[in-house]
Length: 519
Image 1 (cartoon, helix red, strand yellow):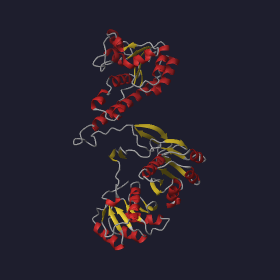
Image 2: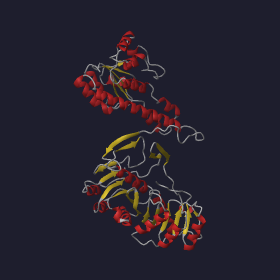
Image 3: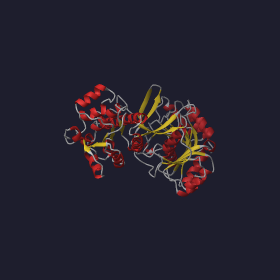
Image 4: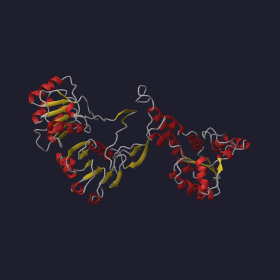
């Protein structure tokens, strides 16, 4: 690439542009531009040539055709070291364009506005911009192309020092362009798919295109011999670990992200003040209370051994008393909507403790999809957002109905099921888990482990099961431990046998007809 003598600038996002253009102009670089960008530069004192003057052809069709011209694309695509290209460019009066600075119509911002119409969306699909970007990027050996304001500074610095942009930087910029245009096209196709009438809508497209931006490299993946990175989904507004601000502590690890996500998603299930402790992607203690510190103590007391080194999520601002409880032991991560200033000062005594602030809003419309990678493929599904609006409206399968207190405990326990690996069994009171059995191949074994893990008497507790009891043995074990009520999906071939067992033990049982498998 030779010295940069001509730049074409046409941007929708104007931040940083004027200073960048002034820097180019001071170096004697001719600047071509269009529309609003040209006006911005002229008003800022930068000499600009309109693209229509450069091409000898006016803008037309309400501005839809501005840069789609051989003099523009010939100037971008012509190879400077190809004699035939050089000859043809001279023959047709095509001047080379050495630098392109373009960003695209704000399609995603447009469709995100309430009430956006199809016509508005279509008018914000950029045609000339992506075409120029792709032309310039294809010829990156001769043309530098900038799509992000973040690159203005380093590109200008290189030109100031050498009169050109290095080959290494040009290739990086080329890659950035194709990532950018791929995301842009993906956003358009996804939104257009979403506009198909409901009776025609295909939930799962034949070609699935996913776009995520890399936030950071991780020290390693799930294990030290695996490499890893964290990517964030574009455009998600829901309060989440992915969008959280890390206030302090060591860099988040692969496993920290998994555990923090599980803990927060469970904490968000509760309207009442809640604390959730997760270890190895399973809750080991969940509780609600009138204040946060009490909720945390109750969650921790469910399984103090497992809680050591755990990941904790709250659905309320962390106050000083709660912070004191947290600093009294070893904790890996704390996720919360907010941290009071005195609580933050207390928590900062533990310099390695990771603090994630998801912002003050703890509720929001849950959205999006869930995916699991398998070798050579991807399993794609709706997120498990299933909830029981009114537990008292569920079918009572047994002779005895639950008491009001049992209903409250059943509702509490059922929410925990969703974040516990299958097979999942939860013994609980109305505001505290007592015993959790997770991830066993046999539901009976999950019951036995939950009993074994309990730190408090199980007499008078309720039990939640994420899926049906295939046999009565699990229910018999629960009754033996002291459970008085059960919530489960039902649907087993042995339902009658299980219901009979419940009646024999005087247990009240409700059926959700909803399963919460989590693998």
